Image (tube, rainbow, N blue to C red):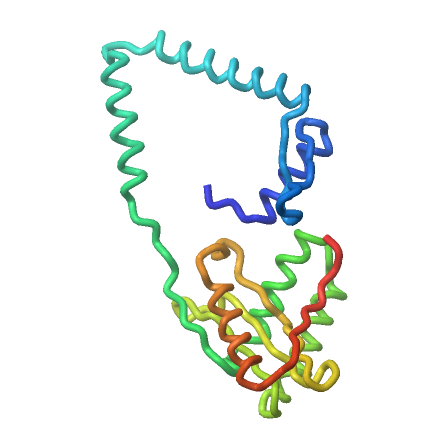
Length: 214
């Protein structure tokens, strides 16, 4: 279905808040949660299945001139055609350094994402724009670098290492984002590899990323 991780997380959170799911920590991996249908969830699941079964049965009963085996073969062929269709992956290039439009596109991606994910508004957008505008002139100094992911001439992701923002020997990872609809295609991984390669090559002792509680 190509759903974004953040979308799935919000859906699961809403179902849990409404009492359809229960969440427990996985004892073998605390980063994972086990999801279980509650009694309310099981009742809703049965009702959905019953409703779907009734819809399909009613539609089949009204078919005229098409047998059930014929329909089954047609649906099977359609499903196999979907499976055989190659998934198109965006062709991206990781570019180091400033390129025209970098600040504006990076700010737009941050503003769009965090307005939905966290409700941030004009103040956040202005802060990102101001911080990036102050950082770009420092790109010529040791320990500072920025990369963008370019797809068909459009900037679809950014990441930066600020070697002067924190204490000596500590790299500050900043403005890491990938455009909506392109997450999960390896763009973020490529950006992170470029940034971490720069960190290692320049001898930073550690890398820090500032964030906020979800």
